[in-house]
Length: 433
Image 1 (cartoon, rainbow, N blue to C red):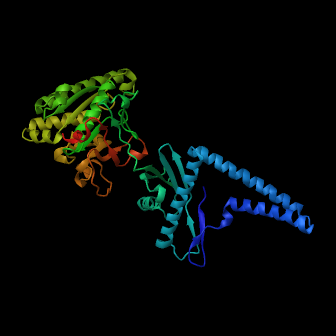
Image 2: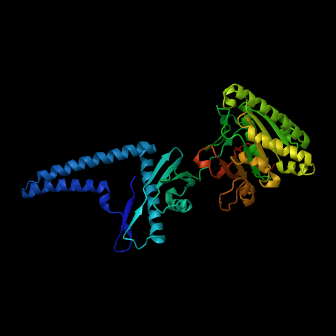
């Protein structure tokens, strides 16, 4: 792709010369050939040479345009998507042109606009904007891209943006943000969302949690945010995929009894310490076998779900010995449990220091994060778990929030809107707990 040069006209606007379009030259060639025929018929003058050259040029241009259409249609999946991709690219180009004209070079005789290409990929659009000298502000380019998506394309928005590895392009992913990607569970049965790969947990139509690459999950949500419903979905899917589950919560709820858990703080810590010994034994077994991780030995995935961490921290604050043991064991489990297949799923109502994991255990806790309801709109919670992102204020509904998974594709490498699975049979009662 080559940059385009727009030249300033007498009215002060910047135009892209028509002679840069192959279709214009095709029309010219056909026009010259037709004119030669008319001149010969009515004036008797023979311009056969010019007619032949024009027809050859028209043939070459036709072949080129047909190739472009066929190749573009294949690349995008259909002719209509190809035309749509060209339109989106042109809209983005015009938006960048207007920004450059108003803000930077309004008196220049010409403007250089970077090469732009849009390509449909399944349910998303991959947009590439060439990086010219002086173009360093990714956030401003993202704003230009979003502002260009109008009319029938207003449903699309940038969900991921980054500078390419070689630094020569800006890469964007556009998605239909008005189309819900949430799972709807019918008849209280999650079977249709169970993965054939036990190490992959489907969380939405466009989100899969790879538990081998990202072994730990953090879930933050206030009361009635949808955290309990998400837990129900997650536990049932894991169970159907053959996972062993232990559920720990100082509230002592149903899941604690159902999944061999504990509610007393001391017994929670003692159980986690036993699991740490299991982790060490697994890692020794993996090392003796010369394997890289537990999948090579077909070891079963284990989920250690620790809920209501804020309440646990509050109870442990009165016992310094138990608090030290808690910090030591959770730090160790999050650090060495990855390769052994023992996964920590940490849940709390808030993501701040007093309500969540100790700072020594946060490194892996930030690799996969789901924040629901008010937690997703809390600057304090976001700074603790997904630092470095400026996110506009938004009123998230029940079962809505933000998610970030570092190994689930570019779209999820930064916080994006997320909706938890919805159990159709329960309706809004889903969120009363």
